[in-house]
Length: 263
Image (cartoon, rainbow, N blue to C red):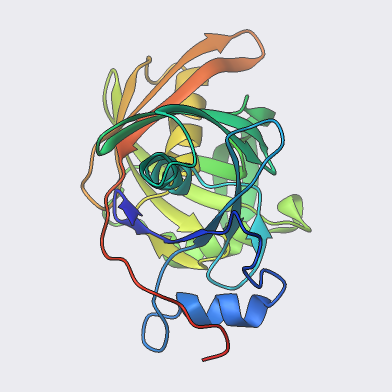
C-alpha cells in the first residue's frame, strides 16, 4: 500500500508467526531491485486493550516507534480484513492512536507531540540553520528555507540526521516553504530510509505544528509533500505545545502477494 506515495509492505501477523527478529531479511524485502521494495514494513499484531498492535520496521531493518502514513495504511487494511472496526484503537511503541476509516481516506488521531525545541540554531556544513524540533511520534527537525525546490535535501538532511545534537537516535529532517495562511510545502530526509522520501506523515505533522507555533500558519494546515498529494493536519495550539492532532490523507492499495521466508 502507499500513503501519499510513501509505500509499505503490510503483513497480517495476528498469529504471531512473522520472523520479526530477522532484521536482515526484513531489510532485504525493502530493497527495490532485489526485494519487494518499500519505505517500511508494518505488522498487524494482536493487542490486549486495543484493536491491534502496529509494529514498524524501516527499510534498513531497524524498528521505530511509528509512522503516520503507514498508520493510515494499516488502519485501512486492518478494517478490511476484519481486525478492527471503522473507528479503531491502535497500539504503537509511541503510544495509542485512533483512526477513522472512510474508504481510501483515513483520519489518524496522533499521539500528543512532545520534546519541543523552538527557535534553536544548528551549525551544519558551515551554515547556521534556525530550526524547530518536535517528536510527533518520532523525532523531527523543521527548517523553513527560501527556495524549497533548490534545497539540497539529501546532504543537508543527512548532516542533520547524524548531528551530535540529536545523538544517539538521530532525527528526521524536514524543509518547508509557507504557501498560505493555512498551507505549506515540504520535503523530507527520512531516518532509516536514509534518503529523501516523497512523503512522511509524522514529518508533515511536525512541520504544521512547528510552523503554527512560530505563528506562520493556522490550523487546519494543508500540506503538500514531494509526491504532490495533499494532506491535512488539524490541531489546537496550546501554551506549551499542541493537542488534538489529526492527520488526514489517502491510503491506497497497490498489490497483494505472498512472502516466503528464507527465499
